[in-house]
Picture 1 (cartoon, rainbow, N blue to C red):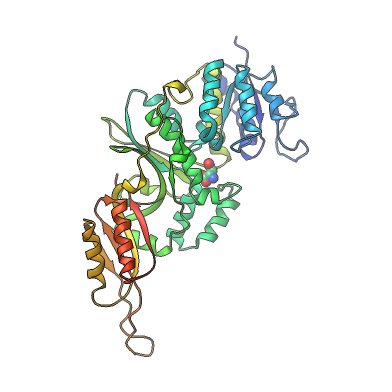
Picture 2 (cartoon, rainbow, N blue to C red):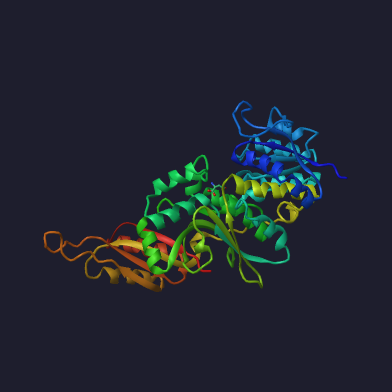
Amino acid sequence: MVAPLRVGIAGLGTVGAEVVRLIEEQSRMLSERSGRGVRVVAVTARSKAKKRSLDLRGIDWAKSPLALASDPNVDCFVELMGGSGEPALSAIEAALKSGKSVVTANKALIARHGLRLAKAAEKHGGALNFEAAVGAAIPVIKTLREGLCGTGVNRVYGILNGTCNYILTRMEHEGLSFAECLKDAQRLGYAEANPSFDVDGHDTAQKLAILASLAFGTKVAQSAVYVEGISSIAPEDLRAAEELGYRVKLLGVAVRTAKGIEQRVHPTMVPKSSSIAQVMGVTNAVTIDGEGIPAITLVGPGAGGAATASAVVADIADVARGIRAKPFGRPVERLRDITKAPMERHEGGYYIRLMARDLAGTAATIATRLAEQKISLESIVQRHPEGVDANGAAKKPSPVPVILITYATSEDAVYRALEAVQRDKVISGRPQVIRIEKN
Ligand code: HSE
């Protein structure tokens, strides 16, 4: 009879509390499926006095995360405190150096220090599992690290932030403002403590950097990710997308190109018929384009206590089974430096919304500037205001929205053309530009 795996948990927030509960509730199934019992023996959190609806009787309280990580009675240290640095970093490092296995949901820490921690895990023989760091309950790390280890990956992309998808979905369906939807996302516990982390795309960038490393065998390089958030998306963009057969999603995309690896996070027009366009609300989805096989799309809950705890407990079960996969799918010293493809050379279709002067020659000027950059248009729509005002008088020429969809072109060609259009003074304000991603 193998002794149960002794688990120590640092952090008893929504996720930590759910993990304690899940291990207790599923103890029989866990031991049947992993061949070994799993028992929480010690915990720690910022406040011992805080009221929690958790039965912690029989579980030791460690005085600090570091003390818990160094406790000889703990086999597996579970870090659920969050934060890209201390105290999580030192505690995980201490646990790994003492040969323990570590499970964490901390994407910020893995994106920043993942390689250093993976090296320690490899050297001392413990596991470093972080399934919950990306897509919560969706087993995407396992899919890339293990399921597809015999298949090359050309592109991995997805909706990796529940808060942004929730906001965009409610704005689209209910015509609500960005601010109202964000408030609800915070109330429901999807958003990070600092929501700009979600809506400005940084949360997605961290997750994407981890996925790119697993997909391409490159070093995690968060600083190589181009990032744009969703705060500039206006209701009229969502309406125009709908009319033109698209939806707007915040995507993280990592793709091999002839110029290197593109890692980018930005609002994206996706065809309404694509799998990713069907993903609504807080749900996440990841599509993997593998060599020689049709695309695989994994869809599921990407945020929230229960979804995150589900992945954490699955990682703990792997430790109980004795699985010690290389954290990034291959030894750290075999991971290559990333060759970053410059964003100016990104190629694809573009949605462009301009506020154009409603006078003869404006459309011709815009078309000329695009043609000079060899940009071919798939469609152009101009919304005309009524010809007369409320008093029956002819309306003065005023800016009208003009929406352009281009065929594939390069990013720098688009910006050169738009700068020329601005110099021509036929538009007012800043053009809205949204990249299109075809499936
Ligand atoms: N704030 C994140 C999200 C939680 O909205 O997806 C999971 O990382």
